[in-house]
Image 1: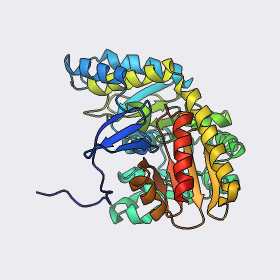
Image 2 (image 1 turned 60 degrees about the vertical axis):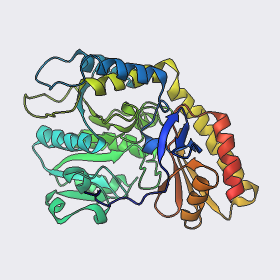
Image 3 (image 1 turned 90 degrees about the vertical axis):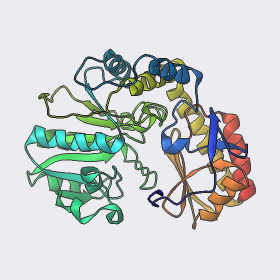
Length: 379
């Protein structure tokens, strides 16, 4: 049997990692500025994380949600404290796509309606409902077309109001920052207007913080820069240091009904041990503040590089905290290959022209300096 060939792979085989460094099977060291797609929030193989997961595995690794699991309550309390949403409820699942599926279902249950408004350039996942609100026809199959979704331009409040006025919208879903869409940050004023008009229309506002949340932007959730409180918040990537997990924060306005939501693996003991360790490390090491400080330093170095003779190559630097996009005036495939194979630096991509940086929240200014030197040499 062979693997179903759906990924374009670089010829690199990671075998061990520590902090912001990864080593391959040839013992080559790499600087990780992609964090496994924003997943490695507290750095690779943090000793407290390793100890917590190992200890839990020696006790009980899994049992179903038909019995009590005090670790779930512990995680909920920690997330409530870290996020500033202690009054919200937590539903645990296995991934960001699954979190968004459940958020969309909640909106429909809550309102009795079925149409959803999403935004052009959005990416919310690859499962049926999540991909239906994703603005990419290439990954949406005919089966997914049964969902009623309308896409409107980002930052266009009049377009949103026009859709809400039709009276059949259950929810509006928006990313805290569009990642796959090119590090597109919704205007803070637009986010405040969006909160206002959805509230007035009785429509559920869903904030997808799967990639932009969990401290990455210098606040726990990216939407908190606008000072708003959505009805439902989804999260996943940075929650558990690589252990599969997803979560939905749900406003007290929602009435739970037994059997409304469910999962086999969500909230299992191993996932909880991993997520609790991550939450503790984020708090104890002030990683949200570090993400903002080091992220601002990284952006300033990138802007300075562009202004130092590389402006014809670098079109724009944008982002918040350690969620940064560097848009180039042309395709970046060769640039990214040189960074990986010549300079041994992991980076991500958004489209053909943007390098996407989603480093672990433990990134240091020394790491930034290494990257900037390498990038300048490659340019």
